Image (cartoon, rainbow, N blue to C red; front, side, top):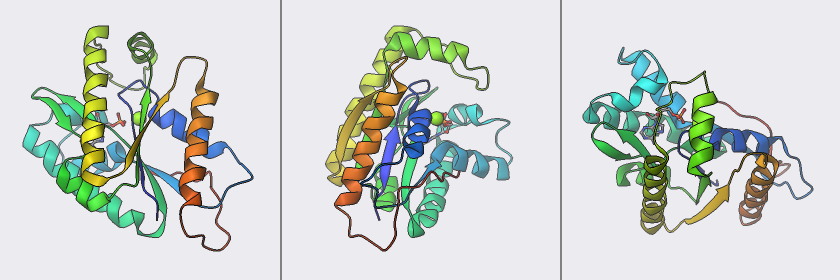
Length: 211
Ligand code: AMP
Ligand code: MG
């Protein structure tokens, strides 16, 4: 089993890059990867507990509640991961009223055991403009300096996660008009990781995604 954690701040396009990469088909395919979204699982968990009205309400819940739901979601993801190679779409840090909440604190890392971290990045200007355009979400309007700070914190945090797990951190840039390039880069990385895994019969990188 190979577990890839993909992170990117809201507007960086991590979910889009994963989706596009899973559509690519190459000759070297040898393993099935499926993407799962940590936010979806947290949202389902919070809904079951009657805590939020939408997924963007999660990051303003009391810190203790966020940590509780984070761990419950981690256990669910870990269970779902038993029979597949998951790409976990999540965040290095979540900006909350109390400051930066680690998306993958040590107890979560211990349960998930990631093999690889991927950081999807764009410029602060691109991220601010994408957030303004996205009417499907309640993205926070944030000054470019604050977006830069958040992205810096994500880099720092991802190296801390790398130290705790031994997994590497790959940065992929997802600039406007260059989604294909970012998806290709991620696709190549998936293939490399699958090459280092013992092959099971008839495995192919699939387009399947689920939340
Ligand atoms: P997304 O759709 O990826 O932006 O995720 C929706 C929300 O889920 C985020 O705004 C966070 O509140 C929450 N979330 C996602 N991943 C994590 C995580 N690893 N730890 C804590 N909260 C998370
Ligand atoms: Mg996303």
